[in-house]
Figure 1 (cartoon, one colour):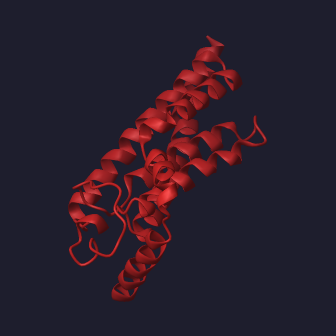
Figure 2 (spheres, helix red, strand yellow):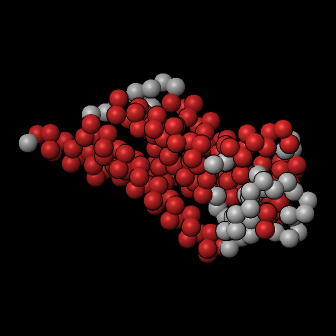
Figure 3 (cartoon, one colour):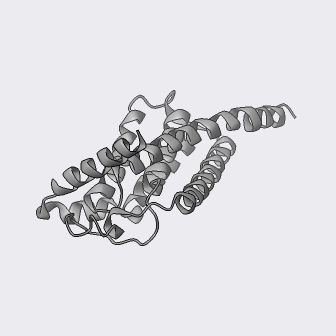
Length: 191
């Protein structure tokens, strides 16, 4: 089964990567950069501070930052343990695919996917009762993750597993916030 999955992964990557059109290279190269999304992160922060008290908002932001550190560490450790070559570094692939980026690290699982889905999911969980349209934020991780196929640096399974890790991590840290932080905030409000 693993061989079948890896073959599907490879074939799907080659197919999707080949759909790239040169006129869109600048767009996808911009989408794949983390710095492009800094205004969105600022917007997330503004929404959190608008919908929670300053004290709660600080704890929410701190929870998000600790979660990002956790997800990044987990991603890096997994990449080193699995040591799967990126498509752009795979000699059997790099001559038949479009490559717009050339990172040298390992591929499994995608840090872009895990971090973007974790941030979006935890922001969604915190804001879903306050903002009806918060689900639209999922456009970001979808574009961000798909850009990794377009630029030639991640297989679909890297992105899918990264997204699942990110979503689960967000749920976990959201639960931890409610178990550890909410009682603390209530206790201090009574004093």
